[in-house]
Length: 351
Image 1: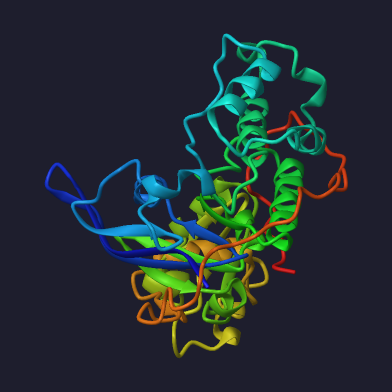
Image 2: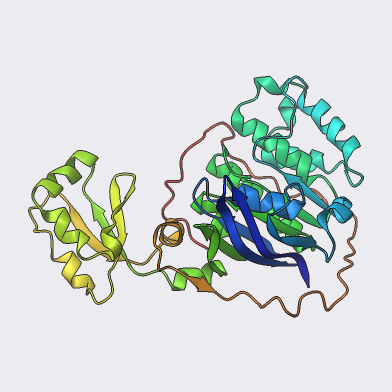
């Protein structure tokens, strides 16, 4: 059954479309991740789903009703923060518990899991950005609702904390809850049952992570150390020759290497034999990773995949969902709660 149904959602700012006729349906007990570069309209779309922004055309329903009529059945977390920096973490939790009719004391479990239980009596203005994000998540997820709308929930989180959050979201899904989250971090693809990529105001690809990964071409990986080495290769003309072998001539920077997508009709051996043995760099062809999945669908205009079920048969079933009492403590995971490393985990799998 469908929990979220957005149809022909169009939003214009300054006369220019930010969202241009977007259709999006999300099934019950699924984690749906909307991905894209910063500024493509992910927050705008989520605000339309939550009913806090009225689209210029089209609209969205939750559980078959206008969002404003079912506010008790969902919780919305914007990226710009819920917590008041003048209050302690515990005072913020108490304040927001009074605002939502389905708030629970499950925040204790989530605070432990995300590693902020020991700082709840400190004022929030003393928190790091990552700690504030964790507090916002604890506030949001402790509500006993059927749908969570999370705007960039992993922004500012280190990779260990992202892993723990993904575990929480999977536990909520196992209880029958539905999650829709936005992200510009490739690591979040690993938590998704369903991925939708936004670009140029529309959904350009929509399917499961595995299905989308199947459509990503082989990756051309150029290793050569620092950027100065790459500049030397470019001066020798070797980079120009490589660009002829990758799609759209693009070699994207990824730490100390460059990555592109093998052009159609090019044999991997052509790439691997291009740079001489004495070269400062090596070029190889390999299977795509999670980070490549993200880069392919947000940077390449020809990338388009969709296996989404049609909207005509939505809401033919009763969407009244029933839930048991909140589950026991989730398994606690250990990890660094203060490190804010970048998404350099290119080996991340979808398993």
